[in-house]
Amino acid sequence: MDAPPLSAPLDVGFDYTRSLGPVLGRFMTGLRDGRVLGGRTADGRIHVPPLEYDPVTHDPVTELVEVATTGTVTSWTWTDRPLDGQPLDRPFGWALIRLDGADTALLHAVDAGQRSQMRTGMRVSIRWAASRSGHIRDIECFEPAGVSAPALESDEDPVTIMTTPIRLAYTHTTSPEESRYLLALAEGQRRFQGRRQLSQVIEAGATMLLLGVTLGQSLRAVGLESQLYAVLLCGQALALLGYGVLRKLRVPFFGGAAFFVAGVLWLSVDPLMAANKWVLLGILGLLLVGVYVLLERRQEQLARAGRAWVERVSGWG
Image (cartoon, rainbow, N blue to C red; front, side, top):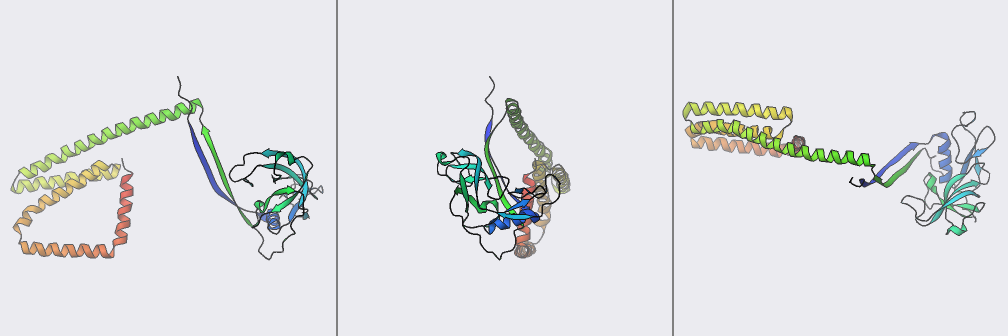
């Protein structure tokens, strides 16, 4: 039996910002000031909202006229459960409203209280938002006809830019074919991860075998032979470290770095044993002071470089 289709909630959102141009800019400025403007086309009809171009002649619409803030419902539907982002948070009607003086209808919300109060032909008026900025939401909603608020005198600059938040939340359910495809991808990912873990174990074992043998020979030998094995170990470790960098593989990179440090330390044993201990302590003190000064002066730069390297290496295989 096939598994049930997969489903997951999806929430898509972004802020859509656009320049308005000469027609919609004047329309939005009018809304901010409590006035509604319509655009007159070549056939004499007044469109609300105004069109930017005449649908018949294709010429730019340049004449805007003010229409009333009251109108008539020409068609409507009722919303019992408003969604996030809609004009009202309680049941309301969506309606096409032809404002007095206009020849086309405007889609907006009507706060009628209940479904039984809504009807085609009912008279409504604009309820303006308490705070207006030059957006269609400056009309909070329409309500059964009453006395509309007068227009506001404003000395603010004309509205030229409008930002509208776009939000869409839904549950996506896949088709049976898409479900099988996604499940196959997930299964392939699990198998790939298992194989990748096995390959990392093999890489770690090969690294230990290759460099561990050389390190063991260096530790068992004495004198010049031991030093030669230590030099060979450093060369092998550097080659492995470079391979890890080029292929972006963590195991060869860190293994090579660790064995290179071990080789350098083993090369340093005999010279350190032969040197004067007081000279060594002085050199060590100078090194510590130098490290302290470097950390003190370059702390932020070193921290940023370290974080950058950690982020880079964490993405390697």
